[in-house]
Amino acid sequence: MRKVNAMVMRNRRRLAQLVLGRSERERFSIPQVLDCLSLATRVAGLNGLLYWPTRDAAIDAAVLGRARELGLELYLWLPVLADAGVDWAEADLTEDAWGNRGYGASGRWANLGHGDETFLFACPNAPAPLEAARGRIRGELPDYDGVFLDRIRYPSPANGLEAVFTCFCPRCRERHPRSGEWRDKLRDKIDALLPLRASDRNFSSTLGSLLDDPDLSDYRLSRIESVNRLVATLAGEAKGQGRKVALDLLAPNLTLFTGQCYETLGKMADWIKPMYYCRARGPAGLPLELACFARGIKAWCPKVDESDIMEYVGQIGGIPNLPASADEVELRGLDENCAGDLYARDAKHAAYPIFPGFECVRHPDFDLDMTEEGVRKYCRAFHSAPGIVLAWNILYTPEAFLRIVAEDSQ
Image 1 (tube, one colour):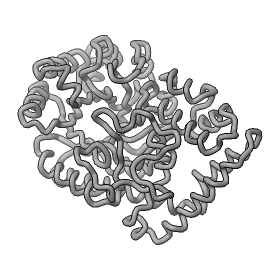
Image 2 (cartoon, one colour):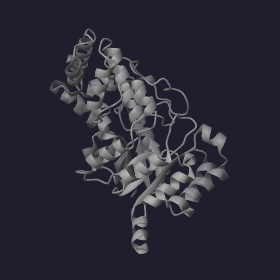
Image 3 (cartoon, one colour):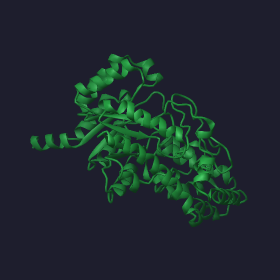
Image 4 (tube, helix red, strand yellow):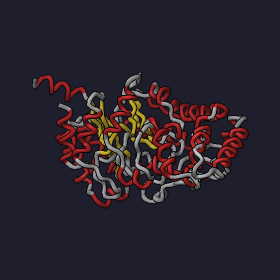
């Protein structure tokens, strides 16, 4: 029995994420960071590390050196379209159907634009983000075993519902001659939502047609193609160096907003990490994204009852029986078993390895109520996965959580 357990422990991949932003460097000394990495590797049996470099040569060398000593497979954690360490020019940012750039307004998360991460997205067709990422792959990837591409999408509901309907910048209009037609149709459909009565259930069909109108299928396809083209170029750069490629993707039930297509992106990667975040109250977390989506709809359909909106959001998100208000969804989060349901559905027909990601943290900067029982639920939900990713910063992962991960791997 011990031999069987040891084999399972070796074959199941367990990776952690590490970022040393301004707040982390204020809270932790470099020796503490290295000790934390050593502890996590020893206790949880880590196999790999996704590292967001500080661009401080001494710090990065220390982290990479310790990771090599521990025998970890190293991935360059590379944000591409947002928080890439570059202040994009206004012309590079996504443009919505009304000509606004940057963030939307309806339902936008109040904390956007504060802290180390802004989630201010550039257009996938802008040349600056692509060239910046290619430069980093060429210059930094030789020190790693692979690249972990992050922020490879269009904005999500947390950016404001208007920002979901992008991009109509000059580059996109030049690339897609029908962009003007698509933009006008989107505006007309959204204008039709405003006069609906509270008792008018037609809002769901009207809004549904906005997200799934056959006349807008080419628009949706253009977004998918833009993301695919960006990722394919960067993946090709990495594979040309003989390095692996991994992708950080929103949970599949959110990708209708972001232009990410699992079927095509999965073929470009050695593995993908869906963010099955049921507790995180930040961008990419299911509670916040669903809550922001609901609030955006309420701003566009002020006369419609919130309970009807929440029922519709649950249908779109594939999560039945959501609480009756956006505030409840954000504050209470979702049961971790929802992640298991999503993973089971996604993995059933996937032709690529899925390494589910979950919030294995207690983070002082986020109102995140992750518990030991929650970690156990996640581990049970993902027990059949070929790998898991402890998101999103190993510095904030309690030792008790690490021991639960180790138990699940035996």
